[in-house]
Amino acid sequence: MNLLSNSIIRKIAQEIAALPVVQYSIIMDGTQDISGVEKVSICIHYVNTDLEPREEFVGLYEASSTTGEQIGKIASDVLLRLNLPFSSLRGQTYDGAANMSGQPLATFVHCGPHCVNLVTQAACSAAPIIRDSLQWIHELGCLFGQSGKFKTIFKSVAKSTSGCYTTLKPLCPTRWTVRTPAINSVLTQYEAVLTALEKMASSSTHDTASKANGLRERFQKGNTVLGLLLTQDIMIGLEGLNTSLQGREATVGGMLSAVECVKNGFQNKRSDVSFRELYIQASEVVTSLDLEAITVPHLRRPSTRHAGPAQPYIPTTAEEYYRVQFFLVLDTVMTQLTHRFEQEGLRNIVMLENVLISGQVNDIVELYPELESQSLKVQMAMFRANYKYQSCTEVVNILKNMVPEVRRLFKQVETLVLLLI
Image 1 (cartoon, helix red, strand yellow):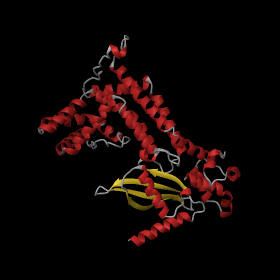
Image 2 (image 1 turned 180 degrees about the vertical axis):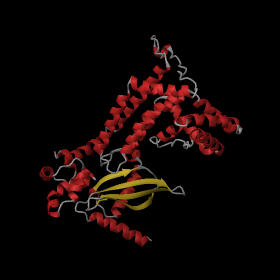
Image 3 (image 1 turned 45 degrees about the horizontal axis):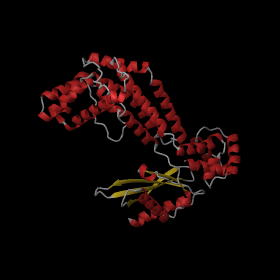
Image 4 (image 1 turned 90 degrees about the vertical axis):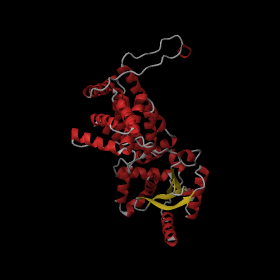
C-alpha cells in the first residue's frame, strides 16, 4: 500500500512539474481522528493542460499543535518532499483563518461564504426579538428530536389538520445560514405546534411536561410570531447569498457584485412600508390563532446619571418599538457586509480579473513573474479584437476550441487564465 501511495503521489508531483507554466495552490484542513489526535489533510490544486482545475489529495499528517507556525512547517515539508518550487505557489487555503492571517506573503482573502455566516450570526444577535425567537425554535426542535412521545403527538395533530407534516429541527450551532427551513417548518405548522405542546404538557412526565408547557407559553405570544417573520425575511436574503458564493464558477468579482446586490436589497427593505407589511402579517396570524397580542416589553428607564436631564425616548406602540429593532438588524447586516467584504486581497484579485475582462494591463501584473506586462498587453489587444467574452469561463472555452497554432499566439493570456483559475 505504501508503494502504491508513493507511486501515485510521485505521479501527481511530476504532472504539476511538467506543466508549461508551473502554478499550484495548497489546501490544508485539520481535524481530530477517533483517538483525538490532530491530523492535517493536504491537497494540491492546479490546472492541467486542458485548462481543467484538479484537486489531488496527497496525504494526512499528524500535527503536534494547530498554530500557524506548525501548520506552515508541515506545508513546507510536504512541498519539499514533492519537489514543488515555493516560487510557483499561488494560493493557500486553510480552515484556521485566525492562525494563518497574521502577515502572510500571499494575498489574504477570508472565505466568502464564511463571512456571510458571520454576518448572519451578528444579525441574529442584534435584536432581542430575533435572538429569542430563534432560541425557542431551537428548543422546540430539540424536544421533537429527544422525545418520541412528542414526535408521535405532533405527527398525529399535523396530519389531522393538514394531511401531512414537516419535521421540526433544532438549529445548527455553527451554520447560521441554514436556518430558514426550521423557521418555515414552525410558521407553516404553528397551530399544530401549539396543540401538540398543550397535549404534551398535560400527559407527560414532570420534566418533559414543564418544558413543553414553557415552550407553549412562548409560542402563545404574538411577539414570537413577529420575531420569526422578521428573522425569515432577513435570513432568506443571506442564505441566498451564501448559496450563490459556493458555486463552482464563482469569481471574486462576481462575489463582490452579489454582495452589493444583496446590500441594496436590504437597504430597500429599510422602510416603514416594508416593516408595516411584516407587522400586519404577524398581526393577522395572531388574530387567526387567538394568540396573545404583540406587546412592548417592560422598558427600564435609564438613570439620570447616564442619560442626563433629557427625557428618554419611549415608543408609544409595539409597531413603533419593533420597527426600530428591525432597522437595527438591517443596519447591522449592511455594516457587516461592507466591513467583511472590503479586503485588500479581494481588491487585488478583482484587479487581476479586470485585466482579462477589460484588456487593460495594470500594476497588479508585476506581482507575478510568469506574466510579462508588455507581451500580455499586446496579446490581450489581439485576443479582444478576435473574440467576444464577458467572463473567465468563456475565455477558457475559447482557448480550448482553438487550433494549436492560434492558441500558441496567446500564451500570456492563457497564463493569466491559469492564474485566475
